[in-house]
Length: 184
Image 1 (cartoon, rainbow, N blue to C red):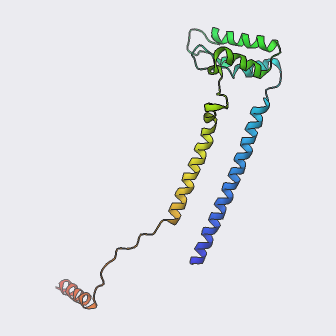
Image 2 (cartoon, rainbow, N blue to C red; image 1 turned 135 degrees about the horizontal axis):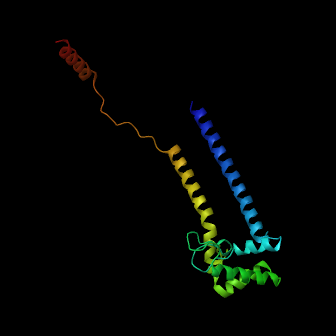
């Protein structure tokens, strides 16, 4: 029976290790895909699509918290982009018409307004932490779960309370007393 339990534990351990390896491989492939997508700038296409994509990478400076390409002010006396967003989008279209690259356009806005104009933080310096936290949190969570599983599987079994040995004479006397009290 113990050999069967050891076999099952080894089989479960092997399955867990294989699953973790597959998960790490999948994570590596996913990270590579994200890096390639961000690195190549897949927003090549028509001018309107390019302008819309770049407008969605810039924050509206009016304080609404929307990106300039989607600033709409719902519930306000007007709907649609505010004057600040219209100004940013007009400036964006001017730079696109001049033939500037996406990187140069975004860098021009950063030079003019600061990094707060970008909808997503650049992946460098302290901002790199914003990109790494989800992966780190996942890895820590996985490590905690694996640690708890290992602890529960290998925790010491509590021994029963030690009790003094009862002599046969005392046990026989207790049985006689019980019989005497119940027969009356």
